[in-house]
Image 1: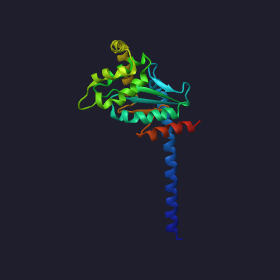
Image 2 (image 1 turned 180 degrees about the horizontal axis):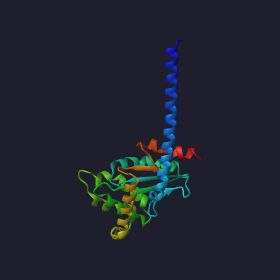
Image 3 (image 1 turned 90 degrees about the vertical axis):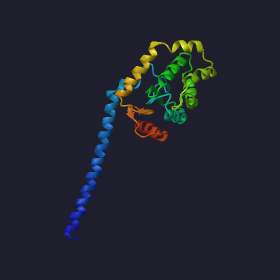
Image 4 (image 1 turned 135 degrees about the horizontal axis):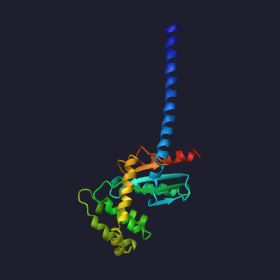
Length: 216
């Protein structure tokens, strides 16, 4: 082998070594920044008013910023319910809001008024099930929600009174403020132990949860 070939091979070996070293350092910095982001914004992920289900003392916390009128949130809802079931004993799932559509805030107020009657999750299921009817983006009909709620056995008079409460506006304001600080620009947006899930789809959320559980 001549000297020129030796030099080329040596150079290639050095470049490959630098690539993998750089990739490792980048990944380490990426992880470090993720932890830093989670720590910096720790109080913004879960608030006392945030609905949740799953583990009371979780090893992993999943936060979803959703919009009841968002079509993608609706599509994700059923797969997410299965994920919640599969990870129930280890993972806490928390709901936050990013109201990006015309009737989103109205629907959120309905949800929390129903929560006072112990029917938050049933109402969320109902709103997503019938979203194409009441939340059609070309021809929305939010008043249709009033005809759906009696199916859950809710006290309708109380619901109508409770959605007027000013604390509901504060819940929405706080979620919007936290979402903005966390960089939420679309729904649904997920955070797993404070780290954003950057790729959309149930499989990517499951992978992010498994990554956190694997660290234990």
